[in-house]
Image 1: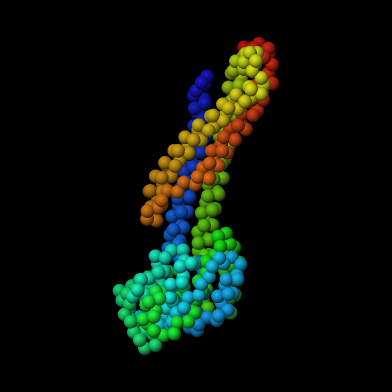
Image 2: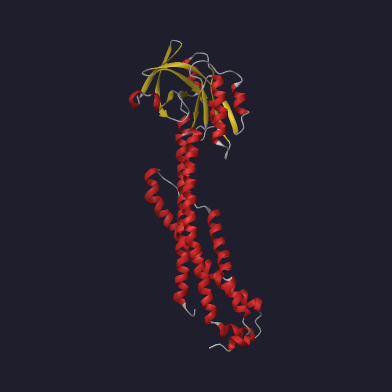
Length: 349
């Protein structure tokens, strides 16, 4: 209270640093969540092995399941059909795929619908219905589109049964473990695909690349903001040091009245922590508001209905680190004040 402007300026510098840090952490967490949902839609399956012609050998599924980093794998039966305007396309029964897919809105077509990859459609035009022929039997099916599982059409169990033919294993879909080495897993399954004469589609690599960019962005921004917070904490130490000099006679009087050195250091440490925690809490609240505005104005443009995700763990770390750093910033000033003898302090002008 002796110099409120100086105290307010010091707290404001820490408040700005914490506000920016909180806003960035919350904004990146919200962006990561929105991107993850979009990646689930764009790449609903981590890895697929699809045979365009001959059925897969019985050893392919065990080989995929035994690969390090694969959590679950399923074999999908299907037939080779002739699709109007496209040609010969494997049609897969996606009924058993629920255990490995990340988003079922694209890969689970209803009865009477065939889901085709965008790349197979000539000129990108999506017809409403197409004729699908299997062994001379033709069905006219409605068309939906998607991507993320390779060059194969998807149908449900009832639709595949109505088409006839002899369904055989023609694809293996796999889900990867979180945190797996993407390059190693892709290489291992690539070797299995070559042996089985199958096409490997790697949606996991696309997801990992996007997550890597977010990790790099997060680390770079937080490191820069950490420097700003460190400078602000130096300001707290400076403010507390000046306060100790200005209150030398008051501290000496308290010592003369019975305040011990430990109690004096504890009092000054409490002041430093109070200063840092108040600035940190206010900065956290303001930063969350800024992040909400940023998500609504920036992320919503790329991803519809993006949710604001609060990284509670990271925000708690920011508060704890700021409190601990404020305590550390008050160590030297409090030790200096405690070393002054009461008589010497009272003799100061």
